[in-house]
Amino acid sequence: MRTDAPSPLFASPREAVELVNRLVAEERWRELLAYYHPAPLHASAPDPDIRAFFVDDSAEGAGHPAGFRRRRRPFPHGFEYRSHRALARDLVEVEVTISIPQGAGDPDQVGFATFAMRRWEEGYGLVVGSWDASRPTPTTDTEDT
Image 1 (cartoon, one colour):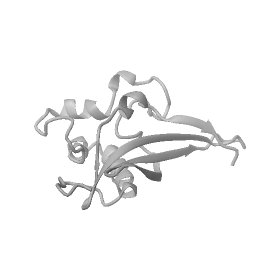
Image 2 (spheres, one colour; image 1 turned 180 degrees about the horizontal axis):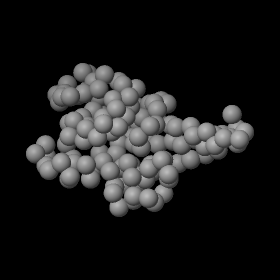
Image 3 (cartoon, helix red, strand yellow; image 1 turned 135 degrees about the vertical axis):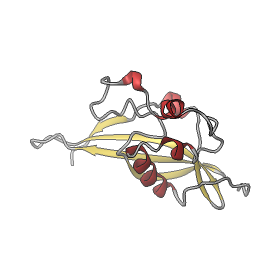
């Protein structure tokens, strides 16, 4: 396991999901960017460039009504922690989920998404990987419960 930990780090994948949701809701893009190791953009990048890393404004009004297609990284806002698993010694995949009631006795629509985190002895950081391009939006299923 790596010991050359950067900062800031999350204490756990569960804590990461909670804090990321808060930072996205408050549009604190620069603070969220600091949790990526290595950083995908320089810390001195202009605010619009940093926001564009997380939000795709060209998708406005398109796709899911909750804006899932607009939120590109690390996962759509409002999703909750479900689980995580090791991909390698210092890399984990985190699965997040959301349940959207359809009303009138219809089954909930359930969405899933994944993102990766690097693990250090001191905590976890976000990483950019191929899953960002291949899974920009969550999958959805219908659940009977």
